[in-house]
Image (cartoon, rainbow, N blue to C red):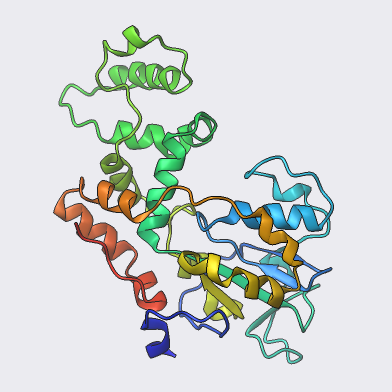
Length: 290
């Protein structure tokens, strides 16, 4: 299997085996009516699958961030339902309510492309900026400050101003008085990622999926999803009419990747590629150096 995984040709079908376990929780959603378990990886077109499953379960879709909790007919795959070494199954792990004939699938993507997609999607969307403001935007900008005069009182004032700036409540001429009021640069974002590598939004797909224990039957590349989607939907028992729900390619294109990676220091490029080395190893992707 290792030779197969390291090749550039990635089949739609086949079990993949890995060695790392997710921290006590499995991120997946089971749809009993279709016998399908979806294991999402961040920034791999997961909005498309949300649209499909909200449509199939008869709910109303309210955008790419539709809350999972409102989906009818889904069951969260959670380790509270975990049954280890179930003799009735050939899988390493099974879950209550997940039928023997159910199919688990996931979509993977080049990790640098995922990272670039998340960054550009966030800074180009007021809604995303508000959502991620305290999660990583403000910490990324603030941690980049290296001034020797950076004392607690200055920091508190700056945090308040940055908060207002991000919410769009400061006038342009006010923000010009403080050159540090800005959205994080890609370099600042990457440095924050390197300092916080286990964040769910960007950690390695092999960790998000824990495929060794989850035994994913169908694993497909995001980069070739357009070509493989008809076969994938057929294999999952999903009506072909759902093909019309695909959306245009967003951020994270090759040009986006090369443009932003080219602005990083060599040391940062090396470290961010090392961060995703296991995804490169298991999925056959290549590091990006500009």
